[in-house]
Image (tube, rainbow, N blue to C red; front, side, top):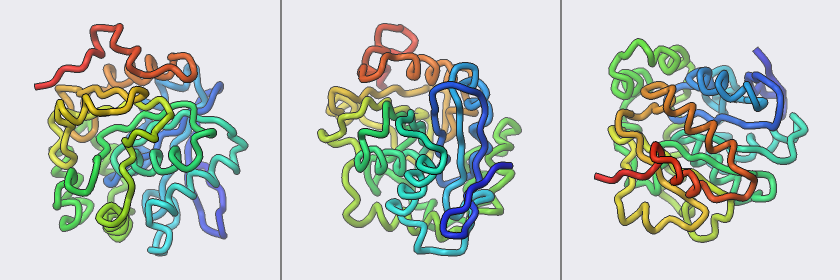
Length: 263
């Protein structure tokens, strides 16, 4: 277990491999732990980090002032500073994707590329069960008690439910459209086609994404594509990270496997 102190509070993270840095940011249900397979696959060529956000896993919880999207994005910024990282690839899932996108919009010069997995476009795209069900019920609902999803359930008891509620309240307010035309950083948007909690993009929404953004739907995945289709997801991550800096992920369309299929 590795940790840093920010304002006398513990921030837990794990790291594997060497090379250019990539940071994995978890979502509303779970912790850093469900990124392990993706981290192991990426660590062959990259230095892969995963951290627990405020209120999750082994990072400090109990201070609601730290649970806003902006404060979580500031945690990511300060983590990069502590690690001495000037430029990074970010891969975020659900809440983690919103936080990664928030940070990218604020500090685009620090983000080489961004992958947003099962990331809602707005509050209407999120099931109300996130607001009403306790974390352990959400974990069972989203994983179907699948044995492969055990990494999601291990740290569910450590989640402060207020961390979920606060972030959703942010989305109800004036949270900007992270997928707007002002997003200049190359961004790959990935959804599990069978995700019950985050609405997948319609064909119209996918077609309206800015030129540096590209949408891929994984048809055999639910809310956790990194677990539901881990070999395919990890190949997609590898292909995305292998693109030259500044290149739009739409170049992935050259591979038949990643051509967007809409129902």
